[in-house]
Image (cartoon, rainbow, N blue to C red; front, side, top):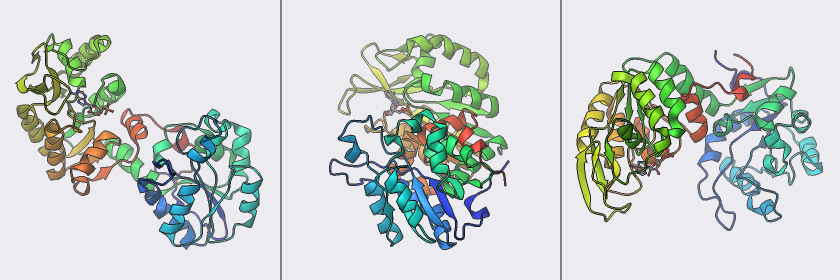
Amino acid sequence: MAKKTIQDVDVRNKKVLMRVDFNVPLDDQQSITDDTRIRMALPSIQSVLERGGALILMSHLGRPKGAPSDATKFSLRPTAERLGELLGQQVAFATDTIGPDAQAKVQQLTSGNVLVLENVRFDPREQKGDAAFAQVLADMADIYCNDAFGTCHREDASMYAVPKAMGSKPKVVGFLVAKEIEYLSDAIAQPQRPFVAILGGAKVSDKIKVIKNLLGICDKVLIGGAMAYTFSLAQGGKVGKSLVEPDKVELAKELLQAGGQKLVLPVDTHCGDAFDANCQKKVVAAGQIPDDYQGLDIGPETARAFTSIVLGAKTIVWNGPMGVFEMPPFDAGTRAVAEAIAKSDGMSIIGGGDSAAAIQQMGFAQQVSHVSTGGGASLSMLEGQKFASVEILDEA
Ligand code: AMP
């Protein structure tokens, strides 16, 4: 069922407490090196301001451990400054999260104003989901909005206890979260077929639940990346010095059994005699990797086979690179898959993290239906999980 969005509530002269994901990378001088996450929250922020609401923004940044230097290292102050530049207006910053400075600045907020609270993780109660801490935040505002997709799989106070503490006051999703749910949950629940998933990356263990869930709903699940070698071991193949998880071989056998024809494994492997772009390279049949070589990418025949399956699909989900895409020429398999997805006229969803980085880096991001902004959160959705942080919000 669809959730109520920020667009659906009257925000005029109201204070909106919005959980955003301003967890941006900072350099040693506390300068933001990539402000994408701030830009992504702009549609929800602008929607409130244009309609005469006031905004209290809260977020975490990094993993502060309580060291004195953390107060500067993980401060949200630079994000308030950058947001001010992007909006072309003054953005206030509270030097604490629920303390006297925050309380005083919340009191002063009027229609069209924006206040950024200091890092919610500076208070250990945030990650404990503490109800009393949450109540103080909830009492600051008339409306709660969750637009922090990257954190939706967590039940931190700002994500779950705060909307709970809002009681009967409106609690809604922002545009970013609404869009992620539309693609990662709704579209997958009623897919156009054939529905094809492509899964890669380093480890099977990270993606067991995703593989199981997608095997249940997809027509084909294509496996690439280093995790293919654990499957190869399960089939009695030779994997040389490849990255494998010997303790997951039994599980890979079970998945092979359960998947049957649905599970499509590589037929060839591009391998090298070292984890190095300048190593000796060879393409060998899958399961035939020489003892002193390691698999670093799917081979060209696999890339062609995967391309052809992807081009025939009506719904495509991709999570995880096909090889060491950061190290050419072992980016070729990932590039082939990215290109096929870009060419396909099916609905295409790119999971967050490395596959999102790869599709952007390779220049195909504009040719897919949706690139998810959340790594862990998008993986959880592909596992079929429901988020308590979203479930608790109002239905449309
Ligand atoms: P993940 O975070 O599980 O999606 O894994 C992404 C990482 O897996 C990337 O950094 C890739 O370089 C790495 N990777 C993919 N294929 C291989 C491989 N064949 N050998 C080693 N690392 C790989």
